[in-house]
Length: 494
Image (cartoon, rainbow, N blue to C red):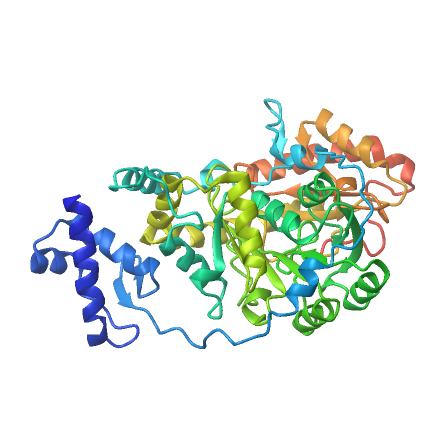
């Protein structure tokens, strides 16, 4: 209890003195703070981490702690009254069977047999996970007084505030709920927004786990095609008119599986179309923290530019940490927030407090920014290694888009290719990959595969995996009319 009190007292003292420093002004060193306030280095570290989590201080590895720049802008007034109509417009939707095909999900969760290279994984390889940082954070969190008690149902206020800042200046902590992983958050959102039997618009292709959630809830996924600039607005408007849907689920940033980023001119158009239809947009911002080193500035989440509560935002720490570090957030504005909260409480009560405390410890430490930088650099290197190997060994597989974020590539197989046969041949050759069919809610336009470069040990394993895929290609692609030693026209790796 004494340690917690000391941390709180030091954080308060430092908070009061921040006005003495200009934005980006450097605070005294940790050693100087230890000597001045006669506290332990651990107390200083935890106090600074608390201020960093509050957005008041920025810690820079090797440089020290600095006063953060003030947040710009405020939450616009907005008008959420339209939601009263949308939330009550359940109508007499026809119920559909809640059948679930989990194969598209399990393919990226199941561990491959020994000796098989994991091109189907959906999480970072252990060598890329911040294992030491997570262990230290969990250890510190577990020793906090009250850490094993019951947390607030909505989540720890400090963690809600951290997620709010990461989404945008217009989002407040009061509009954020802490959830147990992105999959859980998506489940809560779809259950809150659409009654059984209702249509839900989805990108095509899209994440199989989301399709499984929709079908498990008795919803009818309706595909809206995606091109290299994201979901197509003209087809989105047509789909809303034709179906009467009240929900669109989309991934505007590094879409899974195509890697597309919603074009700037389409962002406002998508929100306008949804608002006109009286519909919600569930924004699955799942890999914002897996940006590649060459990506440049990222667009803001759609939720940051949405004063009217059209967007229900989902984001998570899991992809950037570990599959077992299941801490995520739901952000929404208006009456829908209470519905989301009620469903989450009924389903899960709350996210365990030790995990929330550990998340605060992790993201407030200097190790967090170092980890993100390392992952950004390494993912770019692995992406480049895989694209180069595919261009060399499998030029007949079309790669229309090379993403600057995320952890996979989306490849089109030559016309006439038997996708299940190629997947099976790859496994016989010692490579597990994700077939493309589960990513489509209707008939796919062509055969595809998704190759992950994040779940493997490094560039050498990527090169070996693609070399093995060449053997699968030699076995399966002969009957397609494409010569294995010559790329299809227009199918070159860009």
